[in-house]
Image (cartoon, rainbow over the protein chains, first blue to last red):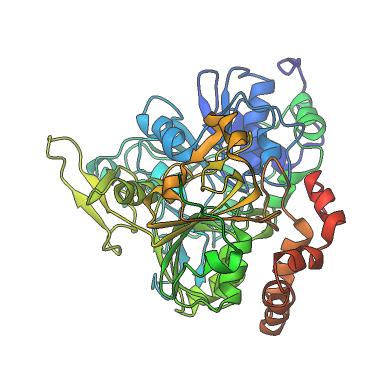
Length: 272
Length: 296
């Protein structure tokens, strides 16, 4: 294990590395993590956590390969090179969903969604008002429609924070967040829910009563006004100074660049 | 004596009728029974309903060829190669109707189909907009007094298309050491007719040597076809990787109607048979590169 604790803050960190380090922070020993397709930021975060503070974080790569040993982040996060040297293959129908639905395991889930609204509802289904005649047909809900409703803590990552991806109200709810806010999620019988939204500008969380999204920390050099400008709904005005997101350490940056993702696959998620 | 199931791609695809609901076992860039998909297009099949967990280039080609008018599934994407643009256009134009299900809801529909139940429940999807617009999903009170669940109506696909590593001539299907594809555990078991393409037809003794790797029994399989590189251009672990160049060529062609027609003529309807297709896409040299999982 590397000497990451005593490593100084990196001087040349980039935003992808900051997001990965922040997301890695959300996972601890005793957790199980799984990833879906095109999930370079979560995959890098799980891996970084395992190399630093959470060596016993269980990783189920692609929801298929348990405890894999890939040689680097490959071009796909849903193909065999990612789950090289797994200790077990987990079959989807018979195994994966038994573990995920049980409630004891895989209690945290990372979500990427085309749209996310002020109450943390996600949309990967359609853009436009008419579901059957959409303006844009998105890929579809896949596992999100399950993970939002089965008591998971949801961690959204969004490398492209803008008013089209962070919206007042999603065109279609394909991943249940806090629904209309307040107690609506709990009233629907759902536990868990969105915990954090990590974007390229800031970290957001949800007010414990209203369940409205709010800025938890600003990345270095980013102002609240910039975040508001890039957000499709009004954010609650900060009551005091907003903390600054911790930058990754030099050792974390080294691990990401040299060990985890030397081919820079993570950069593919940015600028979309 | 068991019945022999060996047939040709032409004969196997002939078991699929216009309008059928066809379950395709594949993922975004993985394990798609592409030789069968191409043969369905060659035979001019129309109005198919495609069932898949995650559809990729298989769905995009069927959409491009006008062979399908509905989709039941959880997602359609070619992952690193982006959205399936011809599928997307067809949905946006109203030519394909989508029944979008979460993974557990699709599993529940197929599971009920396989077990001859009216429905199975899931806790997924509660709170989403996907329940109200779908007649096959209904909120249901727990008769034992617990929280409500979503009843998912049984789905029995007319046909399931599966690609495998090995099969004997009686339709017993063997897998080589690799991850089991999502839905192998349920999708073929729910379907009325099961068609399997296999990289190799082997003697039954080969399967008897590792019965733990037999994934489907011959009695539920209706047709098997020997189809070397039958999943190309998708990957088929552990034998070969996905064909990056061909996916990129398709992504380029998919932008333009004329280029789509040329692409389909060149790769799908043009080649006389599967062997001719494999030559068209680069022959033995290309296959060797894909067997090494080379990414070009």
